[in-house]
Amino acid sequence: MGQAVPIRTDYAAGEVRRLAKRAKDGAQARRLLALAAVLDGVSREEAARLGGMDRQTLRDWVIRFNEQGPDGLINIPSPGAPPKLDDTHKAFLRRIVEEGPIPAVHGVVRWRACDLIVRLHEEFGLSVSDDTIYRALKDLSFSHVSARPKAYKQDADAMAAFKKRMARPVASDFIEYAVIGLLQRIRPRAQAPAKMEIRASRSS
Image (tube, rainbow, N blue to C red):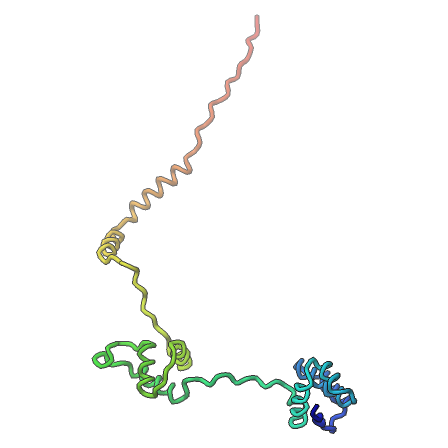
């Protein structure tokens, strides 16, 4: 078994525990408590168990603590994958979008995502997806315009006939039918026949 890495002694165990109590990061607090146990003389195996880790992981945190202090026990977030489009690429996109395509040369009157992908590949040898283009255009304050979809097998003659038929004045007929229907609904009930009173005649 290898020799344990010595832990720095300029922090007392009680001070490390106070730091753990004030820590906002739960993982950092757990690691500080494990190191406080080490400073108290607890075995590395037992200190690792108290911190919910194995001895090798505890050794790595001891090294970080020795080099960076308590702040070194905080997880460093991953920066993630670098963006595919840098400032040069975005400046190129801004310029060609503002200038617009030349229909006789490019064959389109407005840039599409696929066209911009081709231009980026021709200029920089860069291959990107549609989503990357859309995000870049959004960052550059450009709006994405999509063509209105056309219904499947749309009949232009039927549409023209329908519009012509609907353009005829129908307001007067509609009002007349509405008034007739309203009168039918509020027609007064037939009055009930008057009750007949039968009185016995007095005998003289």
